[in-house]
Length: 299
Image (tube, rainbow, N blue to C red):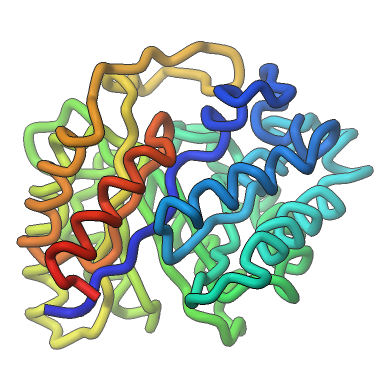
């Protein structure tokens, strides 16, 4: 089996936990505006916990969180700062740590019904242009539909850095599917066709991830693809299709690091080669994953 890479955990809720400026709808972007040194602190805490890949704090650098005016005035500047901070966090580190550029849903998380390609693509392009000089790979994350994926894939078509697409799943579906209702098997087929480096699943409850990895792995193997598979689940209660992540507080569940590791072991057995955490999964969880990686010899 391929070597395991440990991805970092959630940024927004870790910023709030350590006391960074944090309010809705700005969410994690508020720290970029008022306390960028705390963003750097979170990156370093994940690196110290053993993360092999850290993700830029650009998730909220979109009009959905900033509002149209602030995005127009400072969106690209904030995304560039997010990438600069992540790159700075890797300086003087004695082991390889990659920086992933977060490309968030341009029209909002968990809501495929809000997606519109026409305004979405210029937003995504602005984030790509702002971060390109500071990152090692692209991570389009929390993708809710194939339409959203295809829009982002068009923007990234001419980029030379590795591209990873990460999809959020319907927390309550009996079989793994996107929040749009589209099947994971169809998703895997489409991602294989793009020449992407990786396919991941994120910001969904950990219980549904194993089935998604298993379905995706069957497609990837069937197409003799080298597509890497990954998982980074959240600690939320199941998210409803009408939830508005800008204004509604989503409740956390009591999942301890050792419990999360139990899920991670299964994902690894099923073929995942990148494992980390999303919302609510902090440095202590990444530390547990890294310890397991070292003890298991999953270099």
